[in-house]
Length: 166
Image 1 (cartoon, rainbow, N blue to C red):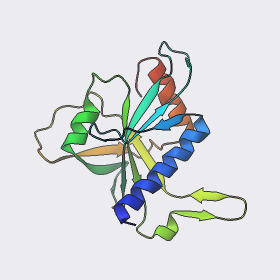
Image 2: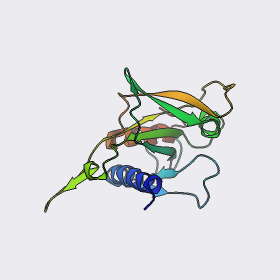
Image 3: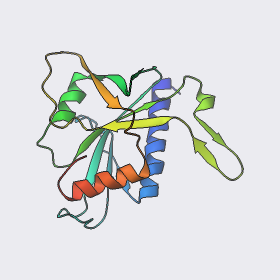
């Protein structure tokens, strides 16, 4: 399998496992022309005013060592940057960046009674970020404290039910 496809599939599995644990329904568009790789939807009203809220993700998975201080310095394509920074979107959008080693053998481990997915996926909202004069990419700084977890997805979907984003 092409390494880029393999990374993408691993990240989808990682986020998919978190979504299943949070009780969220994953989905995706047939064509990704709006910087949305994955959509997660909840059923009902979760303390807000929006019924069946959803959140959207642009997924990025990389081998590169991007840690710079307390953040990941990720070069995001300008189209993705502009699509994610929009403030007039129905559903909150987030960037999720997963950093993994080149050695596929270090991505996960399994035994007779468990499977462990290694490495971290970090997230951020670019909503309201300024327009860039760059034509190809913008380096965004994803805080290392923003680890994508089950509880994070639950907080994001509850915020979406209130027409908010984190």
